[in-house]
Amino acid sequence: MKIYAHRGVASLYPENTMVAFQEAARLKCNGIELDVQLSKDGVPVVIHDETLERTTNGTGWIKDYSYDELRLFNASYTFGEKFGHCPIPTLEEVCSFVSRTSLTLNIELKNEIVPYPTLEEKVYDLIHSYKIKDQVVVSSFNHESLKHFHTIANDVKTAVLTEKPIDNIVEYIQDIGATGYHPNFTIITKDLMDMLNTYEIAVRPYTVNDPQVMQNLSNWGVEAVITDYPQLILS
Ligand code: G3P
Ligand code: CA
Image (spheres, rainbow, N blue to C red):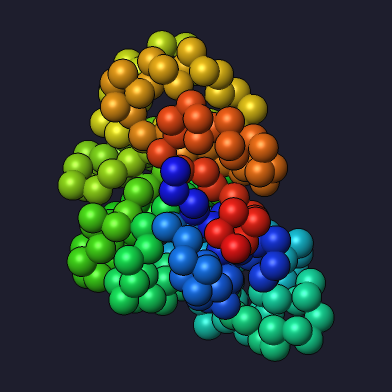
């Protein structure tokens, strides 16, 4: 079973920052997961919330700031002075970093609340520019967006992200053109795993932070877990 560091190593480092992604590589995680949105001037930026308050010293919506403005906010704000100033990364910085590693990059299109037209095209352009298509899996809770991404980039793997069970899940995944399924770990059962494995659908549940749960999921044949605590397993 592979280990993906959720938002970087989010239990120890400021989430979705370069230091968190670098720590994931140092720990020898198999992959990293991140969230991408667009700045006001259309730059793909790596941050989870649509607003700045929880993870930075800024206020307001990501969509209302240019990237030059966003870069001034400190994404390690909640960690005090421990990591100094950590800017909100661009997706380009992360793609460049990943291209120099063997990490898998799980890019979550964070576009359920703010639609961000052209996000899919911009993400694909970066994957293409950095020649990392074989290292990437794109996921989203916005399944229309995922379908659109697949139509413009059918050479990049996609995965259906969901918190709740979906009826006829195999057909649903295949209709989107996805090859993976990223469910909340609480909705997985052994029977479901047996069926998904029969259809060779790669299952990578989130956010699995309990080692005993990781062990059970491993026994059931998940391909990877997305976790805030990769250090627990990898140490
Ligand atoms: O991609 C898995 C997981 O990150 C989805 O939930 O809210 O942490 O982005 P969230
Ligand atoms: Ca995410």
